[in-house]
Length: 442
Image (cartoon, rainbow, N blue to C red; front, side):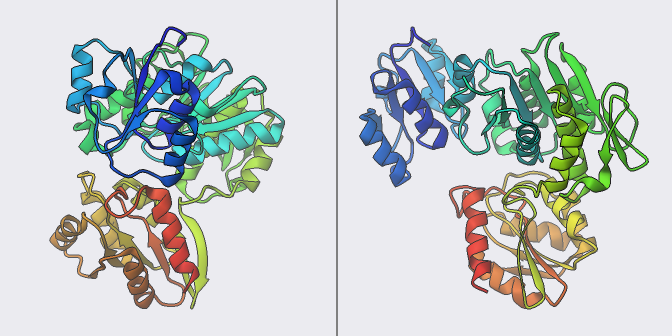
């Protein structure tokens, strides 16, 4: 990147600000579509004297520019980026740029669901054993912010949006957990979404490793095209050279690691996440005893089936990270039958297929409270299959209040929206924090 005279950074969110800070004011122009950004980011831009524009991408972004770095939330098909393509200006993402600076082995995790939990779990396993590891990417701080000279490993959560723009990015270990319907408003088809996920291993060679879920048909199919060492994991069958379960025990390459019951985080999905994490940790020479200790202590992550509190005999769970139907199904299955469930659904509709989720709701959910832009489509589909216990609220606070009235002792109120948050909140994290603040006041 030494030859870059001027880079245009598209997006003033977390990753865009981090890129601007890394490259410095003499080489950066930042452009943001929104008129207003986080006051902290605005203050930092002014402090660093980085030139920027708000309220739209103008021709200034292309003047004298020889590199464009797009933030994950910026669509690649907007007119100004199409013009940049015609001008032969390279377009990359923050992850690709970060890769040019990083030297230590990268463990990159992707998947529709479970990637945040798995990324955090791998990082914890490495640290508990004594390795120095940074956890970054789509979780916590941007990858470009990692300073790696004193690290042993970098564990990165990588989304499909970030994978769209990789050119040379090559992790030492890549992990693909699952691929189900999500982000179709961005990728348009499952084929394109799957192609984006497969980019995580496209540059890997014989000295690199791909850890993949053999039980997921889409994942297993694309894994066959990888040119690196392939390590499968399976919750339902014995695999050669990978992680599997036999007699309620977890094995890796036929070596006993620990018992399934040692996993503190509950749910079948977390067994799969743990198998993937075990595989990565074993490749990093972490001992089975240390892996077991981590699995016994690891509580999970914020906003993913996170227990909040109990009030009036009703338990509240924050699953704000449940932004697609499959993740909501997982959350419902995790709490049922221990609880009867009042489910808060809705937000910005991703236009995914919700038929399977609606069936799960009909079978296992006591009441549903709908919010957000997806409200009408969700209501129509639930009524179509004969589900009648549908309620509506105009705000999240109203939904929590309504859910608490509907619930009884022993029941659970579950926020698992199956939608994006951008109709009412800046991101799923803000939505989850607001939910927890509301619940705290009950």
